[in-house]
Length: 528
Image: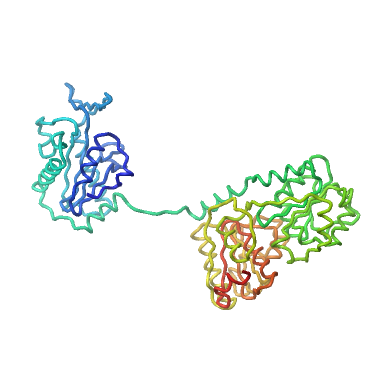
């Protein structure tokens, strides 16, 4: 007989249930299924109930109550069950009444959920595994009882069980159940299902896991104590901006005049929104007066401004200059250089001669599926993922042209917001071709609901609307979900590769990529 759950998964309340389980599983009755320990959440006569064994087969549905150990009824008509350890259980109702009530509760549940049980043969009985039960009563008949004599052998057990079912067969004239009906009952009572966490819960979980410091970040912070000049190299998502701010905070509390700067006004505005640091100046490099003097200078996205002219300027505004002053460069030379300006090797060499080099090799932003696809597509040597789990990257085959691309994009956006409960402000669309002309294909209603990322918008960050940007403008930033479009103009050159790298690495949890027919499978081989 098919047993649910299977033996290796079954949990037995008593040794008696284990004995009966072994007997039932050896029965070869085609079409019969046995459910062990069926919980009744809404019982007709008590708060809840449980059926020890429920047999479902062609001849009907049968409830079996199991009692092991010693059984007696005292002068007050209380049923007392004593197990092999001497523990007593006292019940005012007999096990037969208990089985009967469980049976009727089960029928009520089945009827309430649409099963037609009027012509269903049902029955109930009690198995006393350790005693001879020959007591007579109007409350039960002998055919409802299996006792220790029935347990002596497999053959005697099956014979007794057949007599039990035959009794109910004589009592109720009902059609037999076919295999389909049996399966319907089984599926209802023990449903099979596979429910994955909602996208909303997965996003929230990813956010929690990505915020704590890694061992590598603590190591870099320890270096700050003894090394006033740091070149911190790390790929996208390794926490460079976070460390830059912590570096600034530690110096600011010592009454140092601190500057945090970068090439992008958008980025420095974003950084200023992430911190409550007082007495720290945060602005783009172009806004820094050459007459200024700072005790500490911290540069984020340093690969964008690593030129001889920039180094000379920093040497001028920094107390002690590049060679003797306190500074930190946070950069990603390997995969993000060249989009704003080419890295000047002479400038890099001057920094390296004056400072201590540290490397971040733990990604705190992107999930493992996103990192894997960035590596596969761009060939970038990314760091290990701190957040291992996450949704797969969604490559969407779209039609040729911007209009077709936008239609697919809008469909995905609506699904994310409506079905997956992703907030509009958690979504950024990045056009890797650095063009925003595709927005002309948006409906007026949708066009008015998205915001282009600029320094004014970042002043309000986080926002409640879908944002739109380009790889260059969104460098150093991130969002929960990133949609990438504008792949039609990509080429095999390093600039295209770096734009794609930047766009993909902005995604913390969700990444959707629109793949036009002109690229198709060639996309995965473009930079290999």
